[in-house]
Amino acid sequence: MTDGNAQMQMVADLEIEMMSDMYRRMTNACQQKCIPSNYREGELTKGESVCLDRCVAKYLDVHERLGKRLTNMSQQDEAALQKASQS
Image (cartoon, rainbow, N blue to C red; front, top):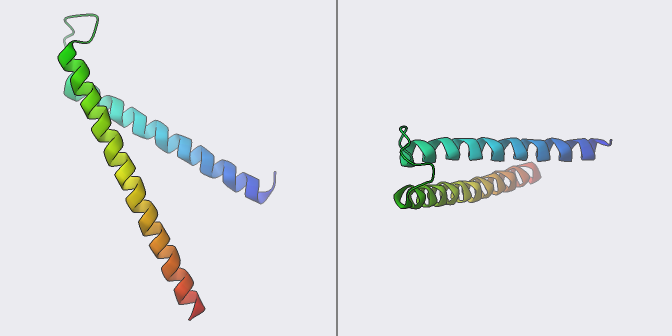
């Protein structure tokens, strides 16, 4: 495996790990927020389902916004480094 392929594999593995972590955190947070610890029914109630839908939507929205913000910051840093190296 070439260095480029190894680096791409490492990036892909890191991305999978980050997404798995985000999914685990989202699941735990939304379950704690929306589902009482003493189950009364085998199925989710309408209120629990709505709460979970909203919780997941908010979590994913924040994750997307943070990703865009971090990408912009990274691009700005890269541009600043290139500009500094050209001077």
